[in-house]
Image (cartoon, rainbow, N blue to C red):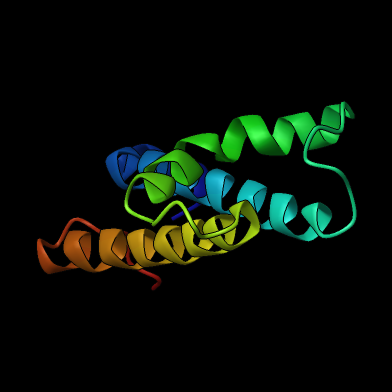
Length: 102
């Protein structure tokens, strides 16, 4: 089975997995770049990282005490996104809806 056929056959898995992956890698880029730049930097790459990762960071901020710095919240958002992708895969696999490797 080619990649396009696999995507269209399992679109209900790939679309949320892709959205979580985009937020995960944007949050990772935001965390690494945030070690070196000011949080109010106006560079378009930084703004893109912030815009894409903000939903996960805001959800994580809601369950994290206010005393925790933003960089640590971003790190926890990364961990939550990894956990969400793992749970997504295993739940779809449990119901027999996840794509097969072979």
